[in-house]
Length: 71
Image (cartoon, rainbow, N blue to C red):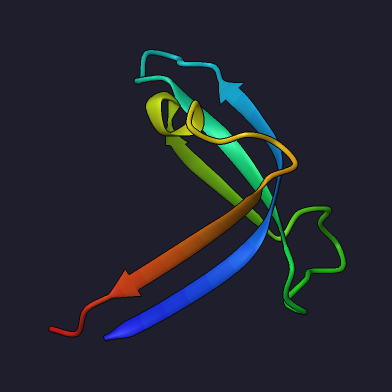
């Protein structure tokens, strides 16, 4: 099992046009850790359902956990 835990600040939340698909939002996070990319303003960009994005606020801290189980 692999587990990655990241902490950062929510920098922006924006609705992506539907184009016939369910509505999604783009959430951009700037990480606290020293894992930044020099050519991008934000470290992580997530596409999430609108229902999840409405739970977040810009300029607030966010914890992200990504897990992958071995087969």
